Image (cartoon, rainbow, N blue to C red; front, top):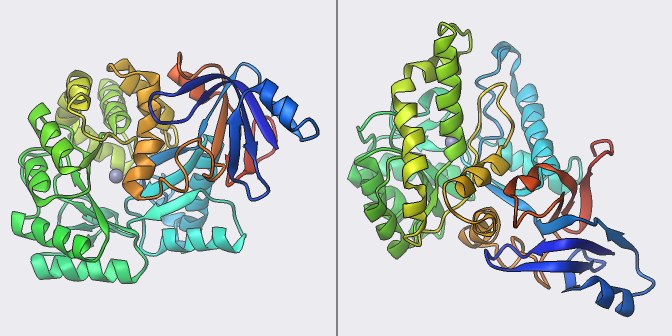
Length: 404
Ligand SMILES: [Zn+2]
């Protein structure tokens, strides 16, 4: 099978090929990349699909999702374990239809993502590649404790929580250590113990830290990814670049919360959605948060810190997994479309340690491929116009066809 289009982005942040053909082998791997003419000459008999004025690029990664966060649904009482599993499956389907072929879930109900991945392996359902951090860990009463996050206090209890979650199948470990205020939740001792426990056993660890001094404490502890980093300074970006800590800004989530809470307040502030009610109380946080991303993103990006695209959208009624919007903000705030695509492809695969398997269009890698209408190198929002999505060389979504 040969896929062809006017444009191809490898995902490395620099390579844009005009007039491209990509050959998939029987195992669903990328066997060859060249031009339409070369493809026609070398494989005249082989099936070819030409998308025309379109872009081929690697399937995207969403590095911050919560497939099992049903907490803002209006009919919460209906959400028993069965419904939660179907909810997570719907998220998985949405991700594939948007061209997201790999996700990192950073906390969902205990065991959910492990089973979703297993169900995919058994062939019961079609899901993206899943890397997950099981339930996540916060201090007693800390950020997220209402949402099923495991609470632990003290270095040994934190280590024990990590051991339990790893025993139960977590691929990554997620801690949460800041909420909306400048008050760190975990102590430095607890953060250091968490990173030590993960790294000595070969696990990578992500941390939710949006404010000071939590961000600095997490840089000092040496986490692998800092989630949000909302009020991060340029100097801290430099430190992260030096220490190899990646940044998942989640611009869209905070911008959406800012815009939505502003609207709700203007309308009188009445909502029966408990998550939205909480967000309204936090409006004083979301406005400077949105501005911090807008004003600082480019300068922090320029420090060389590895930036990763993550959507972290869990609000009822919000657009699902808005990773295209996330890349859109990055471009709006000053980087190129090619650089933005890299945050959701090559960078993400490298941080997850699967860069030899997926995340780039190059020979030998799995056929995780997204075809979209238009030229992504000129217009990042061409990503919204998904034509077809391949996972491991198999078509898992095609525009205009019934969902699979
Ligand atoms: Zn999150």
